Image (cartoon, rainbow, N blue to C red; front, side, top):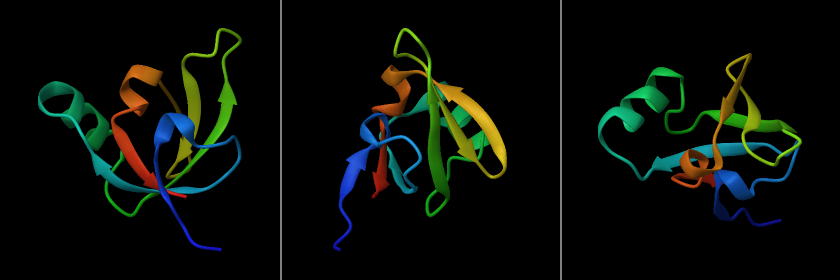
Length: 78
């Protein structure tokens, strides 16, 4: 199966994605990098809130919630 690039907000629950690129600058980029969202890092969506936003992701052994507005700026290989 060939891998494809999608944005993080479209990654199905419990499917592994590998972070490829961040399409943001400034404070949001710094915040995402500080949380460990760097190139070639595995990330798994594990839970979507009842309202559909935010989504909880497992990254580096930690669960973090990321809003759809921010996760749409992150490319992952799926």
